[in-house]
Image (cartoon, rainbow over all chains, first blue to last red; front, side, top):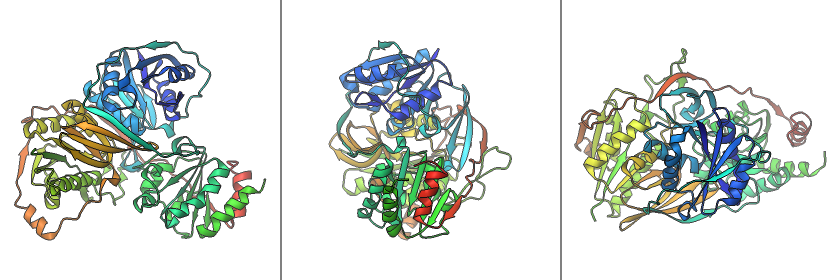
Length: 312
Length: 251
């Protein structure tokens, strides 16, 4: 018996959170990767190169062109019998499909695990990360989503697994993809970036988020935001870092004009180095920051951009 | 077409309260804490009310599952504008699979065209019940909704996904789970709070619904997350950059 990991892909590349899920799966047994799509060839080739993947299953059908929960869950269920665990990254897509698949095989899913104790026992954050629960599953098959920030991803290259096509269940016509509006950006994805710079309510408006751009350009950083900044309409929700947004753990996290509400901290406190820039020296963000700068962000940000331009 | 909307609502520790882990690691201390409706479920109630105000929904049934005090959460939903409540009362700890099975049984009795609920509860942070309910009913799902349009026999749901938005079209009946930007929930007015006291709440049990709610996950222990040490303040932007280069070595 092996472990099946649903691999998310775009343009023939396996997404980084899925590579973290492969890393977690490797601690549970032999790993098989599942690549689904209308034309899954390039992604399957990429999956076969992931170190630690013993076999790649490809499911190709027009119904799988977009990651809709209904056909993907049916596909997982059709394959579940041969596996001890079904895993996916705890991304929007993973969270959408895995509980649906779990219910269809009468299993209580284990969401957003941040640690593995043994094959049936897992650690997961509860109460917005204010507590860590260790839970043991009594189900025959474990259905799990993996907090990508908690597991170092396997590299993209190094393996050479065989690829095997699998049958696709007849599609359910009751859900249909209409359109996607993905934010176009040259920057790395928030959950995959080595550096993240985020703005909060202190940015005052959406226009001021442009002050973060030269710094992000220089550092190769993704741009994030606190929930307060999203609620205030400064930026769209896909920028949100926090318990109700994305969980990140970059090498460097720069929090600008962010007070440090619990729900924001839950999304970034596993970052290796945290920098806080805030004019309120008493802001809770300074309690988790390795380096704190008490300053007005409107003078500090242009200065930071200039300072970074200087070669070390 | 008459459209009944079912809105499941969960009683949770109020989101402004910081919970503490019990010293023996057996769980989280909840005794005496302020309890409220799960914020994502408030958004679900609000969305249902807006559908009714637009003449698209005909009746809103709120349902809550758990201890007797969940009737308070139902009263909140009724005060916001739900028409009646159903309490599925049990002392058993309910996990999402059991909740989904109980809600399926309720849905089969009530025959709603739409179920709207929060994408996740802020206590167990599972983000599973809506997807599981949709699976058990064999209905399509529109999770993490930031926009919901009802159009005849279908629902068009715009979803918050990684990197942006995705729009799906679902045949009704369907399950929709709410994300933050769907709407801003209203506060119940005093007259409506008074009126809500007279709205009916029916009480059921898992046994009456034919569901075994036994948990599948055992809680082994609960621990505090590791604490981060506060670092130090730097005096200038130049010093910050220097430290990041030479000390932290992250840029």
